[in-house]
Image (cartoon, rainbow, N blue to C red; front, side):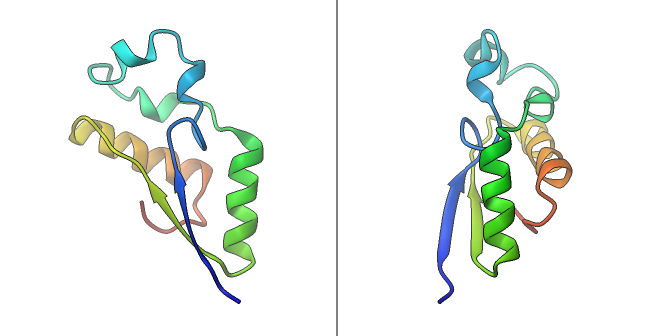
Length: 85
């Protein structure tokens, strides 16, 4: 049976918490989200779900359009199997 899964990006797929002063930086630092390290085991789990035919939607929010672009590029780099965030 095919299921629908919703997965958060920041802190689940991208390691937001590992960045020093992340809360102060993310709203103003250009490409902040693009440079977050992936949480490998979670990225692999999502990759496996997509390959097994499950529907996966990534949930995330952004403070501005530049952050939107950075997050989309992060997804294209690390999880191209997920077509859209």
